[in-house]
Image 1 (cartoon, helix red, strand yellow):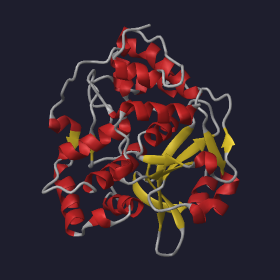
Image 2: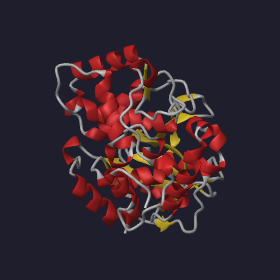
Image 3: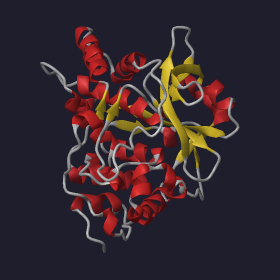
Length: 322
């Protein structure tokens, strides 16, 4: 077996699957990047937090609280590859100046979780800790790119196991399992990812993580069943857009927002619109694109549900994955 930290071994082997990882997977010693590199938009952060504190947003249920923060990000320019911040050192990061689909929902969730803990004041480091907990396997980043959750389908399992987001999809009407999906986007498109481009030794272990994700029991709701499901969706639900094609299980992600007209809409950082938008109804958005197969649904949980015990997290993950 490759030498791994205990945490990485547990994360990889939660249900009997332990990839034989190359030397590149060795978890790096804790290394720090400067705050100016890992946090963009401090003035915007403090402005939003001030509004949240003055409005006592922590008293709002978490789904509605997420949408409060999401609305503060409405119109933020779209920017891709914002997580590729260094040639070698992986770190939790925030960019409030430019968002992609993942960082939009993740930042909205992170701020909603952060504000739920009463403090005299909040700093960028507080939000970075929340992002670390949801973005990385086991909730920890020690500097290795391979610790990050790169595929959204895995994010649902990981964050369910850690009590941050209940993965609802398998229990919803019409849920259908995706079989025989090839997971390969990271290794096929490695030139697009700064860390993989600059560190060729990461590519083989990344393929092993892709094989791990491919074995997960991933369900989706077919798009012809989504309109009937819309009344059950709630503000702040995390919506993964399932794709028809090989490469990954999901091609996009956003949030549910129910607007004043009663429509259950999809809010997301849109590559087409080049900014964060409140789009059509969830079913209407899906029907615009032939490549969209349906949706995955996660419902964020209040912070008191967070699982920090390692053994409990591992037991939860094993139960979810089977």
